[in-house]
Length: 270
Figure 1: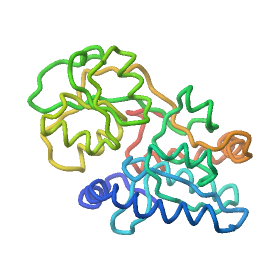
Figure 2: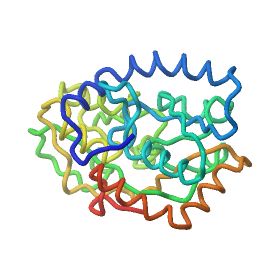
Figure 3: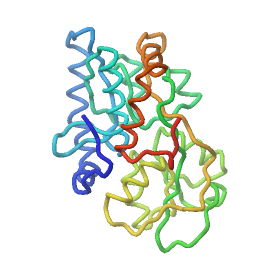
């Protein structure tokens, strides 16, 4: 399961528009089977969200998960002699699926937060990035920071670190969405005034998705970069094993994966 620097626009666009249906269809069957069927002790069931391009998304041609975090998890599992079994899980269901034992690992664009640290274990960072603000192309307002969005209708993805940052900045007109694609569509249609979320995902959708008249706010400075990690259950041995691999030669295998997906130092690496 490998990525490419420039994913085919039609394939990514199809993945964005059909991901909700794919997630509903695949994850229910896959996760219910995973809960009941005895499996190889080397198998690691890895959940990833279907709409987080370029970190994790469903390729509509193969109907399989792909993306940078999927590739990183697959590479580390192979290094550890484990068998990676990827499952489509909606973003908001990832942590509940992990804590209830339906999956063993999360490989998605899910950032570390204090609330999540109380529930799950995070690996050493494999990447780091900040939030970005998308606006309509004809909106000439400056947006140097989140405070500039006060009084405006701002979209954010449910369950993400960016919702907390919006509230911390005093923004009280927050409209929540399951995915960034839906959020950008509403922005293009004037239902919200700005969209705030994962900068690499917003940038990728704007590059390869629908030709909406939208732009990223180039003057925006986020509250800071956030570490992106693999996520496992507390007290389970998997995360310590991954950390040991990341402290050794396996770390060198991550940079080429990030490069393939266009996630180079311009965005930030951990």
